[in-house]
Image 1 (cartoon, chains in turn cyan, orange):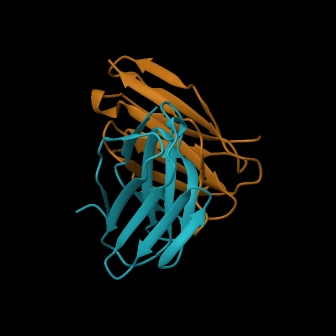
Image 2 (cartoon, each protein chain N blue to C red):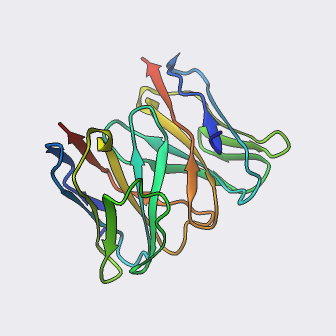
Length: 110
Length: 115
């Protein structure tokens, strides 16, 4: 079993919709969590990171962690075509290694 | 530099040939990482450098893979006798210290195709 599981999608939404992305994890150690965004033929770029349970907001993006159920989520409000990308969740495996989900490909239709 | 630079951006090689992939991390970043991204797969950890030392090379798939880092800066990932299953995007990342809690900065990757 992979340490981080993520539904690969793909996910297609109309412009302005809320995008909801989810991951589950299995190892409770090193509980820091990240979301990366990856455009086609580019490297992943850090979007959000969080340590604690609850919500963290940054503009149109909200990262949510539920440690009791080992569930992490990313919500994108008022989605734009420029949000079309692959979104990768990641969790610390130790103090230097990250475990990544497989990534969810999102398309926002104009 | 301003970001993590990788070269070449694309590489097509014949099965059995050796390839070298280069990574220039952000200046001052002591930690450097190599990951591999295969189609439909998440990022797979290959190796971690702290300075010029590699405390964890557990992710290297076989002894055909090796990596080195010199001067605490540039790193080279070498794949000998390439196989078709080596086809993937090889991503390099760096961070100021270890990645604890702050994430890495990735390069754009080298897309390797073995034919």
